[in-house]
Length: 276
Ligand code: KIV
Image (cartoon, rainbow, N blue to C red):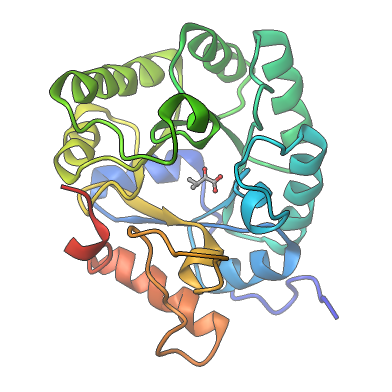
C-alpha cells in the first residue's frame, strides 16, 4: 500500500534559483525520471534533486517504440501521481509531442501540467522559432521552463533514429547557438542529450543556466537517466550512456542512492557511457 511521504527525511525543498546556485557552486545536480507515486517517493527519500516525468513514459511504461503517442492527458495523469510522492524534490514535466505547436497550445499545456499535475517546471524539446516563442510566453507567466536539445526524441523520424547529434562541426555550432537562444528566451534549465563529450562541455560553459546531461559526458552541471535504464529493467538493449545501478545493490533505494552519489562525485558517467 502506498503511504504518503510521512516519514520522508526532512530536507530543504529544491528550487529553481537553488539549481542555478548549485551550478555557481559547482555542485552537481541529480535528476531521474519517475512516472508514479511510489518511485517518486524513492527519489525523494534518496535526496534526488529533480524528478522528471518524461514522455519517455510512452516507451518504458506504455510500451511504444517512440515518445510520440504520449498525450497531454497521459502527462498530466502521471505528473499528478509523481507529485503526490514528492516533498522536497523539484518536479519537472514534459510537454508531449505537438503540445507546443503554437504558443496558445503550449500555454494551455503548461498550465495543466503545473495546475492539475503539480509540476514546478515544464520541459520542451528543440529551439525552432515557435519553441523559442513558447518558452518566452510560458516564462513570462512565471512558469519555469527546461529546454531540451541535442538528441530530442520527439524528432526521431527527422533524425532517422535515436542518433547522437552534433558530431559534425556545423551541427555542434548550431546546438551551441540553440543553447544560447533558449537561455535568451527565458529557459531556466537545459537538458542536453546524446552529444559528444566535448560538445556537452562547451554547452555547459556557454550558458549560465544549469545544463543536465544524458549521454552528454561528465562535464555537465548534472545528469539525468530514465529510471528503468538505471534499474536495468529497460525492455531490449540498455542505452550506452546508461548504467544498471541495481546490479551490485540489494534494493531500489540503494541503487538510486548509488546513482545520486556517483553523479555528485563525478564518477558517473564514466568514459564507457560517453560519445566521442
Ligand atoms: O522523456 C524523458 O525521459 C527525457 C529524458 C530522457 C531527458 O526527456
